[in-house]
Image (cartoon, rainbow, N blue to C red; front, side, top):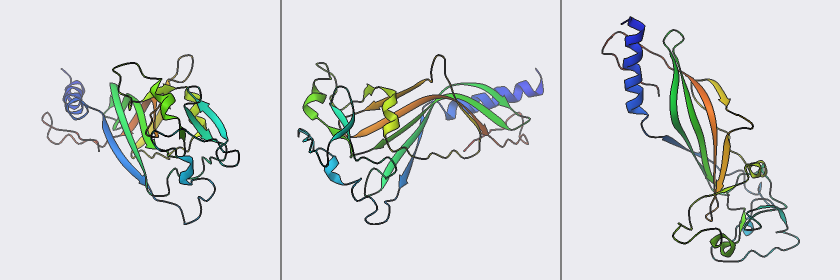
Length: 215
């Protein structure tokens, strides 16, 4: 067996152990300056659990809806403002499907994975009664439900930065492989199929017992 093939086997074993389950990282976005969200991010756009949304002509006229009109966005929603007046927490995860390439010459690793982002936006208007009708008996009423992925264009989107990133490609067949899910707790989850290449420094001083860790 060649030296490079032996290195690859040891590296794959180490990587498989460390990525057997999806890894998630949490980020927070601080609130903007006081008053900067006036007219856009007020809490009146969030409908309390169990209440029926009141579509006031001045403040809550709907801009676009999903699942009939169970989930709606107000007409004066601004996707350029942060979703919450306090900190906005964004969870980012990578669900690895396979590892098509490890390059010990360029010190890089390529993953096929689903890139998943989840956050809360309480400016949505959610009709809790209509949400109940979307679930079958025995299903968790707080679980995520799939909606038309084009709905994502209406939302504020977090800026995600990946350290040591070399290349990030989204995968598509007839169209981009992506999905969007929402729940009654104002949570948004977006996932897209990707091929990600990271820069991964490697040292082989302890070969063949070396261990490579990519942080």
